[in-house]
Image 1 (cartoon, rainbow, N blue to C red):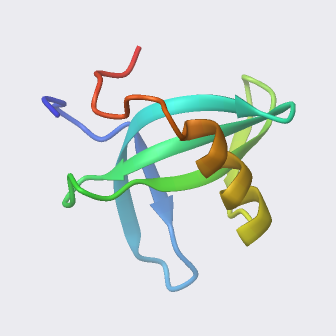
Image 2 (cartoon, one colour):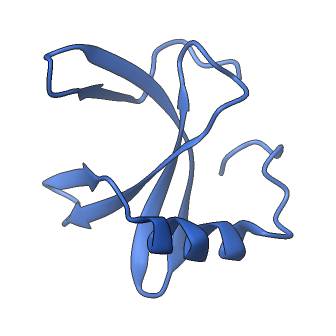
Length: 84
């Protein structure tokens, strides 16, 4: 990806910052999920649920069941396209 700066910075429980590019947002079962690509790993995507409104949005870890629903929704989609 040809991004200058990461779109998202998340801080883990130990206070360590992790930087991600927003790859894609998808809707599954009336929930929005962010597909995030780590700044230092172009082969990995992290999926987190988006909660809140446009002014105050948070990203939340998902359960195995949610991951399976998101993966099923992505099945057949071309993930190597540039994000919209």
